[in-house]
Image (cartoon, rainbow, N blue to C red):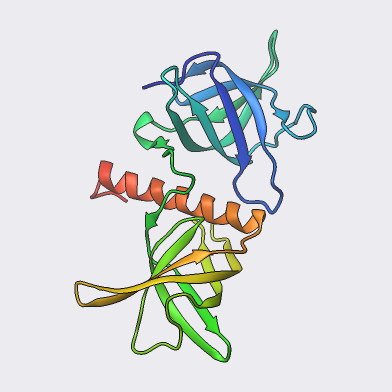
Length: 219
């Protein structure tokens, strides 16, 4: 699969507190470089001038209406009849297909603190999405199904950044699986910025898992 000339891309900054989205069009492609026209900020409708080295999550749709995403960064610009920005393009094997479900759940371990009144527990996730997560329980806990709790989720990104998501949540279910006790938790009061952090973290972990599948001996 390749990105065809004329394909529209939507770009979202990867590591920023600001929620911005840009739209642009693929003008040409050569090797692992995509040449795009200058993107437009979807909120302000103004042309954006992207800085070399800026990192983005790019999404696009194919002719058969499938959606894909990939990580990219600005590597330069090219003069011509149409001024163009150069983006790094990974191999098609590294594209992530976007599921129809709103939130993609990724199996990964991150630290999470769960607080109920004066009780606080330091646990580790089994999986996570922007809508909720599952944690492995250790010993007895004071919370049970239906309880409202406060979470602090630690998200370590590949570039060294660490984001702390603090949100209200609901204990949905507590059950046993393969002699392990697991609690599934729904996030109930996550703001847009924190939600985007989780979405980007899950996407980044998907890429890592995909690379392991492609080349398990070189990750």
